[in-house]
Structure formats: structure tokens, C-alpha cells
Image 1 (cartoon, rainbow, N blue to C red):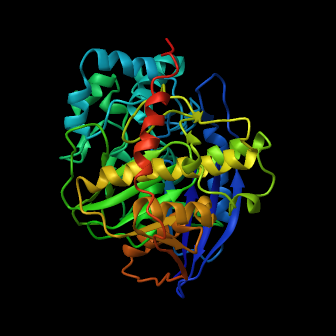
Image 2: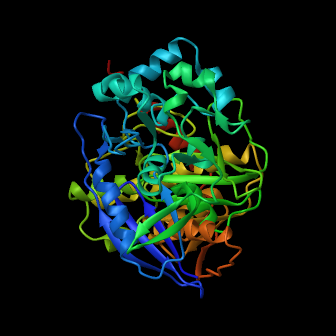
Length: 476
């Protein structure tokens, strides 16, 4: 049996072919355009992405079943009859609804959303984006009046367009701020709060099961898994028991820890309780999620400024750590995620001197990413017993300085997965689970053990974060 995993991420759509031997191979990658129509706005062309998904599926002729992972909070609206998108995809990074969220906060709606959805009030999640689409897209209003409007996260669009099933999986629905975390269904009070009609939303279903079929090369191929990309990565890491944790260092740094079959709901808006997945005819498995918005994106930004030319230049440094020399970078280039949730925070260097060189700045950026990831994991450990071994992946996991510094600051073992495709592999494994097929995806691992106690530097980093908070004025 051959599984095809479609990894539909923020920057590209990738197809991974997994055969019965457990070998996973990327067979096609298609990047898509990023659009920034206004400051703080991030969009994708839905029609471009759906074409890319179909092209990725069509490139494999021996597929038995398909799994698809999605961007999570990114969302759009489309016509129920034509299945054509009537809005761009508003990407998870988009901050156009910040003022709307602030107004809800001023009306003291935080507790309601936290209690029911388990999420803080933030423009990161889909609900305010969907509300914005309905209010600012004339065609959406017309379709709503005629009962032909469909809205949702990108997975629902993909499945509706390609399989004819208007559904979303429970892990993705848990990222919208519209699903009741206890019931696993859309919550009428939350939908009313965000002014999103329940009638426009897809049916919530399990992560694995019968999700329809897609026509490719003159035959229909069943879709047996649909899941959020970060949850797919968690499964790909082999994190299935309570306390198992992974961090993906990609565009951002996203940590998830499995908490079991009951949702953990922190009393404060620090961590995000979320559904990890729900296998067919089983109870949902829950996790706590914490995100650092800028990780790999901060490195790419620095490269665009000319701070370094080759990634080999930033793998090792001959000096003491930047923070030991008083130089700190707070990677709040698109605000601060967990545990601060401050979209008005600004990126910050502090401790600059006339001796500071570009390579010093790069060292401080890597350390800043580590400190932010450590803040997230430290917050998680307050609510669930995080295991001593931290499994990491993503582009930055290839950087030995970052990995060793993370082991030192956390005082834990860091295990680097050798495969760069754990999101797609996790999606493939979920698709295979419904077929009662076991795939062995063992790979060589690289481990970093703590060498130097750096935990005490967290206090100094926190001092810098305080200076970065609430730096940008709220845009009306």
C-alpha cells in the first residue's frame, strides 16, 4: 500500500510518497505566492493553492490513500455551488483584526472564549478572520442571503472542492475559537460573539476515517486523514503518550505536548489547549500548544539584511554566548505568542555597543529563539509533566549552536530528528492508521546533552521581553 501525504504549508505544497517499507520520499514541491496588501496583512490565492494540491496528487500514479495537512488557522470563504473561492485565504500570520479583538477584550469577552474554546482572544485564530471576510466581502453577504455561503479553514475548502464533502477535522476546528473544546462541536454562543453564522461552517469530523475521494489520473483515491500541520508533526515525532513533546523550528517555533484524553485548560491565557487528533471511532487526544511567531523567519530576515551570507557562518561561534556579553535579541518581529499574546510587541536588540559585529547579532538571534522556545516549554511543564527528552525538527534543528544552547537552557536532552519531513510523515501515518497498516519510520537521531548551566539567563532575557512588550501602538 502506498500513502500520499499532502503537506500544505504556509510557503508551499509538498507531496510525500510513503511505501510499505516505511521509506518516505518527497516527490513534488510547489511554492505559492505570498501577498501583503497592507501592513500586517498576509494572504494566499486559494485557487493557486488548490491547483498545486491537485498537481501534487496527480504526480503519483500508485497511490492507495491520501492524507492532507493544513495551515491551521488560515481561512477563507467560497461559493457552495461553484466551489470557487470568493475571498483570498487570510493566513494565520495576518493581524488585520487586531482592533476588532481589542474591542472584544474591552467588552470583557476574554473569559467566555477561554472557558468555551480554551483559547485567548487573539487575531491569530480563525474566528475574527471569518467575521472580517463576511463584513468586507460583498459577494459573501449575497451568498449568505441565498444560503450559498461556505466559510472555514483551508482544509474544509480543500475537501469540499476536491471530494465534495464539506467537513473539517476536529483538530483544525479546535483552532478557530468557534468550537467548544468540551463537546467538539461548534458553539452557538461563540459563533454569535464573532458574528459567524453556524450555517456557513462545515461539519466537524474525526481526523481519520472516510473523508471522501479525489479524482486523479482517471481514478478516485480515498482521503483517510485531514489534520493541522503542527499536530501532524507531533504524530510524526512519535509523540502519542502524555508528556511527549516536540518543537518544530520552522517559520515560527511551535511546541506541542500530549496531555491525554481530557483537555487541559489553563486558568490564564498562556498555553493553548487543542485537539491533537481523533482517530476513527476513538476519543480525541488533546495537547497543549505554544507558539513562537518568529524563528526561521527571523533568520531569513537577518539574511536579507546582509548580516550573513551562508548558513555555515552561523553554526558555530568562537566567542562566549551573546547574552553572557550583554547582547539580547527578542524575536518579536510579528509580536509575541505564548505565553504573552501581545501582537503589539516589537522586535528588540538590547546591549549593542560599538564593538558589536554582524556575527554577534546572528548569535543573539539564535539565542533569542531558544529563550522564547524555552519560555513556552517552561509554561507547559506547569500543567503537565513534560518528559526529559525534547524532540525537535524543522530547518533550524540543523543548526548545532541552536540545539546545544537549547539543551543548556532547558537542562534537558534534545533529540533532533534526521528526517526534515515529519509533518508529512505524520500525515501519512495518520492516513495509514485507518487502514490498520503499520509503517516503520525509524531514522537516525542526533542527541544533544546539557553541557553548561544557562538556565539563569532566562531572567535576563525576560527583562528584555518586558521592554519589547506593547511597543507598537494599536492600529484602528
